[in-house]
Length: 591
Ligand SMILES: Nc1ncnc2c1ncn2[C@@H]1O[C@H](COP(=O)(O)OP(=O)(O)OP(=O)(O)O)[C@@H](O)[C@H]1O
Ligand SMILES: [Mg+2]
Image 1 (cartoon, rainbow, N blue to C red):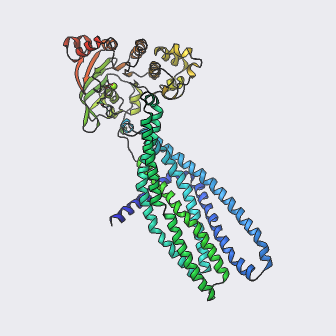
Image 2 (image 1 turned 90 degrees about the vertical axis):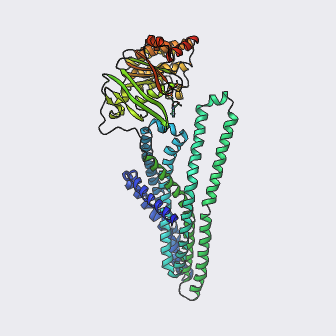
Image 3 (image 1 turned 180 degrees about the vertical axis):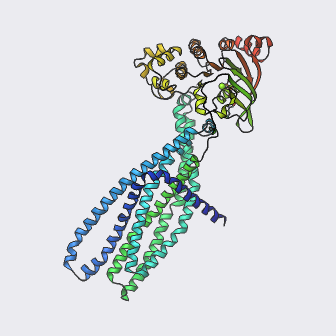
């Protein structure tokens, strides 16, 4: 009973999912229909060929009619030509439709991916994303259309052949059709088994893609730590797993075709036995019998592949299941219906009793209260892992606060449209992401409509203009994937230039200068100082020069604000900040 229930639910799910696929097929319904319709005559022609054997046998072989035998060569060629044209046209339309559907599904999935929260990307690895957002779309649409086409053409061929069977001898046909009923249960079994194995296969394939991505992005680390053996080992492990799963799949499902083979041969045996009796007793002609056997043999071939075809179609249906699982995901951070546009920041940003946790039950920010008046520079300092970057990520609402609120000019940022909120903020991260393409393209990402003058001003302010001028291809220089062709400091200054052209009134800087030598640190510092002029700034500072000039320094330790005030006051207080200061003072690299 339980098993039965499970099966019905999954069947309902199948119908629901098919209905949900319809909007993707609808725009192309005519060509899709045509492609499918063309499979009908392709299949039916098989029946015609078999049917033809009856008059051939009775009129040519037995009655010896000469004009009939003269027609035969023409008919054979004629049939094949017509069938060939139909097969070609049907393939053309089906490929066209399959690709259009794949593109539609992929675009929808990609839009969903872009709409997901930052926390979604924290939780999923790149392999899962590639597999589930790209491969599944392909598997679902192309697989579905191609296999449905094949399935239908074989189905119609089977139907036409069954008609031939019925015409020639209904008694024998009943035997042959009854045998087909034996297929139903094994097909259900296969479906269940596949679902179980495929879930594991998807996980494994995703992991393989992740390994490739990490090998690419982390190749320097792999080389310098001589991790080649370790990675080889990991790769061997997952590929072994692939092998095991592939074999499990074959073991669990591929008995379907041979089983059909055996069942069919039982059918053929019964029919030949019964047929011989019917001929001898004069109930059917030898023409009937020959046509019947030919039709049965022709029926046998497509039915054999219906088994494999069925497996492939199931595969597509399971991919469709996974696609809708993704399309049903909802980002937790969404614009409310009454979300307003933020035109400018007039008074400032306020943290009002803000609590936050990345992982439920593990709070990383506890009761943060903070005023950031417009035009001020606020510096966040404190121990590593204390929560500074987290605080800065909450302002553009990359994550949602768990308790309390962040307000801009008194209104909760949850009531502001995300787009307008983020347009007011320029961020320079601890690890900046540059995109493959040219220097110009990367700067324009800050503001697509920036003109030549603005770009060069931004480069000058970011202390990058001289470097770019010296490049033979200047602004059109390719910087490689993730900006790999630039130095650490150049990458940072390019990110600063990108923030410059955005020209947002609020700037968030997460300084990462420990990787830089003193000279480039000074250049980056100059660029940052330029960026901070006349703006509201939240700076996570590791250098005391920035801190000393800040309007307010906030010390964050272990997710709590422990002190705040001006540099001189905090030194006088002789608390956490003073300790940090004297520690850095002793280490001239950081001072
Ligand atoms: N995406 C994440 N998912 C789960 N936990 C996270 C995530 N990012 C940071 N954390 C945790 O949150 C805490 C605060 O991290 P955060 O990056 O804000 O520290 P930080 O003050 O910026 O440190 P640093 O000075 O080293 O940059 C840390 O304990 C960290 O492990
Ligand atoms: Mg940080």
